[in-house]
Amino acid sequence: YCVNDEQCADYNIFHLIVSGTNAPLAGTVRMLIQMRTLEGLGGNKALPFDLAIDSVGLVFIEDFIQLKRDNPRQTFNQSIQLTSNVLLNNPRILTARMNFHSFKGGAYPNISTAIMSFDLQRDGAELKAADLVRDTAALLPMLDKAFKEAKQMQANDDITKLLTPGMKS
Image (tube, rainbow, N blue to C red; front, side, top):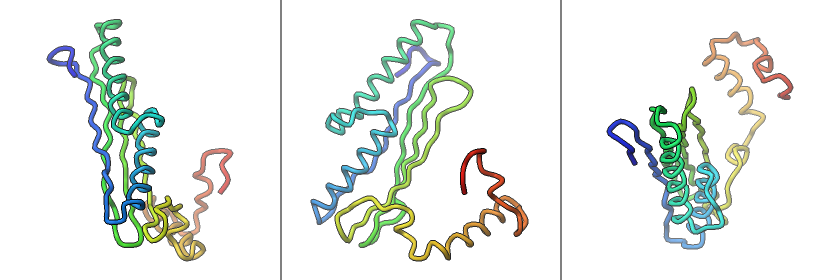
């Protein structure tokens, strides 16, 4: 929606649609993805999904129009965007990524990413990251090493010093 040739509000939602030969399983995964999508967008989870997505967009556009009425000198555009893609899809696991981007003014946009994995062999329940790794004890040293290499740290550097004060390792 544009209020003139230069000031626009963009609302672009590209969400995943899940289907499959096991309808109850696909329905469970679809519902979990839809709930996470609505959480990321601030949508009303009590509404049907399509209506909730549309209502988020409608409120966003109405707020943009009101902002331009109240502050005609405010010249920045606004946007809400969701993109989604499948990272892994095999008979056992489906892993999807959702990237949320929102800019409603200020110095920086709000950006977040959600990665979800689902158990396709059982009930479609969302898996935790630890569920995807057989031996977390063996994984931690590999992650430590890769992180230090990426940050150009020495092998004996203590990465806990990088944590936000008050966080525990």
